[in-house]
Image 1 (cartoon, rainbow, N blue to C red):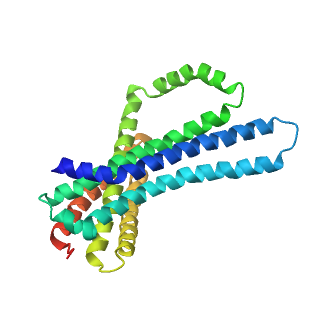
Image 2 (tube, rainbow, N blue to C red):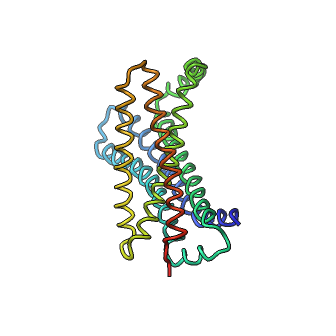
Length: 270
């Protein structure tokens, strides 16, 4: 049944997710085209002030479009979680022969998958825009092709065995931070839906702000202690990222079980 719930959630959001990914990539290609024109215009002797100004505004608009698509993707999954769990549709969802864990985890996993795919698309937009834009320079592509093996060799030599421990702790911190952020958003929506009869979204925003302030304070205090503690720079590095990872893990696990308790015991959709 969990698989069916996850498929239902995916089908409900895949259309908008695909649209935002396509818009982002289209904006990257269009932005690259405007950048290429600006590169070309800069090499011309004749003045083209109006066209240059139009292309500058178009380039800014393309970049803003990519940013807005990224923000809209986050809003899509927050809204989907609220609509499918805490509105009239939520009443139907919670009457299905499934556990509260399955209901929450299906939404959480779908949100995580969609957010990762959208983030990868946004990150892909940067090299696409730069490659298209700078391809107007005749020397750019040949020099990039020539320099690429050297770049890979530098990366291989930079990530030696002794440096891998730094990479792993940073990746762990990113993964746990992402999980914590996702749980905190869903927990805020759950708390807002439980405590407020009206203006539930506004209550959720207030809850998220309060939770974020508390977590930022705890991470800030732990970071200060890690930096001020006696030891080497390596000790400080692992102290900062290790403590942050532990706080994120505790917040994610604790926030999930609090969300489960509220959804299972305190939620009233009648």
